[in-house]
Image (cartoon, one colour):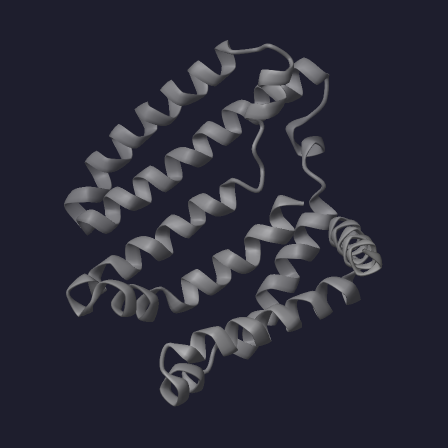
Length: 194
């Protein structure tokens, strides 16, 4: 379910980080746009969070070790990437370290459940959701949206993208999306009766 909700946010922020940053904070902050785009890959990692499962099993030690592994990776990655890419390298190292954390936690959960790490994620649904997000992005590739409407174009493009994304989710029959759509229909139907 996380991927269904987070992937469109990731796509839209990556696409419109530049105009979003400069509109909200001014042209002096334009250099922050690539940092925001890189950080969105950390949000992608949040689609597969195993910390709640470990907490539910009352397993704190894998959380500690996953954080230590991520920290160690971040230190090494920053030592390599910061001299090469500056602050963008630092952000990349930080983002990559979140994946180390996730992989460590996934391994810990899989070990405790007697499964493989690959069995923890519904890859078919995740892949179809990712495909829907990427295919739908065709409607926002053109700079026409912001060239014609300025920052308001981001809103128009975002709305168009979300419509295309929902259509793709429906066509690809993503089970988590169907659950979400059913829940929304029930909520709207229940609210209209009041």
